[in-house]
Image (cartoon, rainbow, N blue to C red; front, side, top):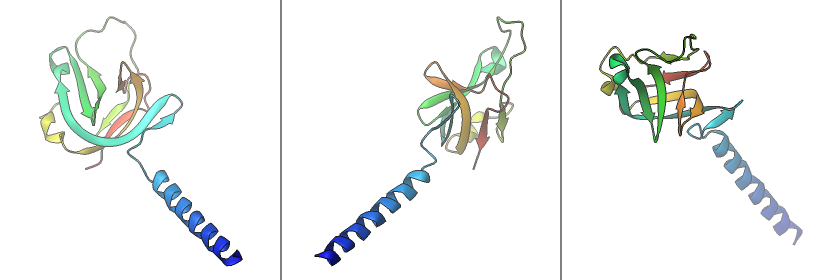
Amino acid sequence: MKNKLLLLSLILVSIFSVLIIFKKNDSSKPQIVDGSVKFVGTIVATNDECRVDGICSIKVDDKWVVSEFGGLRPTSEIETKGRLIGISFGQDTQRYVGKKVEVFAKPENGGYTIYGDSNFYIKLLD
């Protein structure tokens, strides 16, 4: 009886250990850092309207991430903004569709933005 309980205990500890390891290695799950979010995902669409006074953004999985505002803004203050690493809106942005990126951004209007902190970024991983 003692041996069966010991064996059962070892099996349960092993199962929980494996689950904890897999949970820690799930980089696609957003991590919240001081109200900001860090996650890894795949670019599924791009919007490069900032070249004509609109917004440049990248859709990562199911969320849009604003990366650039074009034209005149209604504020006279210089806005702090993160950076694009390995991505340029001066080129054909459709070539990034299907590529993996890491995003560190602020939640905003149901999506995210790299405006508001110079530490924010969208980094191409592929």
